[in-house]
Image (cartoon, helix red, strand yellow):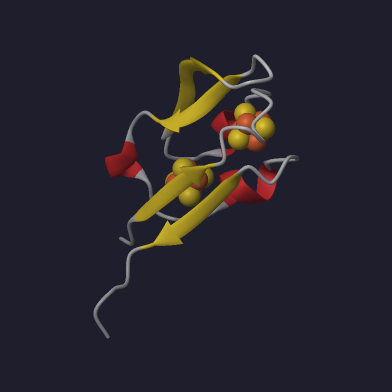
Length: 74
Ligand code: SF4
Ligand code: SF4
């Protein structure tokens, strides 16, 4: 199973929660940290479960998420 890492651009996040709902692995959650606009920014609450599918990034209307996949051996 591939592993992924999600990088959040905290100032782009509007705290809509769509990425939380889109993640099949229940990786993402609200962090409780507010950005400059006052939105509760997303973070990886359960990072070990991320498979790098990028559903979260594709769902985000504000292009706040970047997904990186761990290289697997050839
Ligand atoms: S890449 Fe996939 S598994 Fe990882 S947080 Fe995003 S939706 Fe969830
Ligand atoms: S979908 Fe995008 S804007 Fe909405 S909470 Fe997730 S990262 Fe933030």
